[in-house]
Amino acid sequence: MSVPKRHGNKWTINEILSLQREYELLELSIDEIAKRHHRTPEAIMNKLDNEGFADYNELYSNYNNLQNNLDMAIYEADSENENQQESLNLTQRVWGLETSVKEIGTIVKELFNKFVEKESSNCVSVM
Image (cartoon, rainbow, N blue to C red):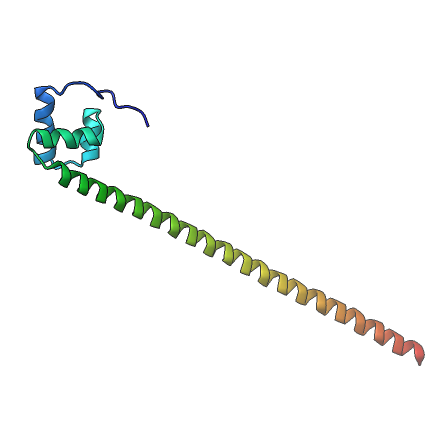
């Protein structure tokens, strides 16, 4: 993970006013605000708390819940993709098995016909 460009820089008055507008009026996410300011989400939450725009503990709790929900959604999507892939693999295996059973049936019929032909020719020879 790279360090944001403005990491460690002092906050300017204009930047603080933008932060307040983005948080209160535009209701942007912490991540979006962090991207716009080239700062970490932690820095954004700290500044919002220090300026009295929000409570850090509430921001942190909401941010972590959101991150956990995103992580869970990603995990569930990955699991669903794995299940779909597994279903596709099973379908392919069943299709292959059906094909194999048909082929085996065809081979058995051919062998049976050859056996019957051989027996018929043996019976004709004896007479």
